[in-house]
Image (tube, rainbow, N blue to C red; front, side, top):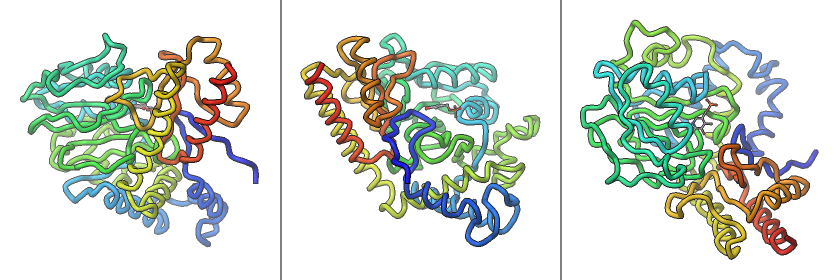
Length: 361
Ligand SMILES: *Cc1c(COP(=O)(O)O)cnc(C)c1O
């Protein structure tokens, strides 16, 4: 078989090899059915079992009880920037947003079309190099919800624990660190995540929503935009992205087989430490771009002494099989995305490459 590269892309991103091989085995004829998952009815018995298992496995992984509905939607996290305010802002029509990066800004832009947005905190003036402290949050106790972005894919910062928001429902864009660790679901009103960073192919968006919040969804909303309709129809109001849900389901099983999210988190902490330790031990040759206490376990951002070296680094890394290291165009430098599926061996090999590059340059 052809050799795989070390894929450090921010998204769409690496998937577990075991998942790809299993999907490959079943691609032509899914478990003796004579057809691919892509070719079968979403209302047939086989796909019904696939989506029910995906729902059950996700509940097991995160400890999600019957108070929540799980939806597998389309439109990416970007559509959720609109669906969240359209469904949850009424009747008060005001919400708090904590702005920690470009994705949060995009969420704000859509929310403003629906109602009043209070920026509870922003670190924009510091180029988003950190997460605001609890004491900095100017929360409105009467807000419809508080929105935050758990991991800032572009800047490489991540919340260590959720902001404390009292009894106001907490809404999270978890697109780039979903399922990287166990969460206390009691803290959340709604979590959404595009699949393509950490749990599957582009096209599926997971929405976990507390059922009592569905009462806010107005009948006046366009049908696809209405959470309650998707929940009442168990994601089957229209044709969902069947193949994407199937792959996400395989990723959920991969996580369960590994020992669940506590084990996944242990591995993520271990992997990130190897890389951050190498950056910190480089005597300033490599410099992390964020404050140390808010460093992301998923997207490791750093810079080299200058542009020429950065370009050379990316080129030589690419020749050695490390792909996707170029930082986001708005930040520059290097971004190594080491999501759940990225192997520890890959991080160790990257660190060896970084040490060699430093010696030679
Ligand atoms: C990638 C990303 C998005 C955008 O997702 P789309 O699926 O392209 O809409 C939103 N939020 C975060 C945190 C992301 O990393």
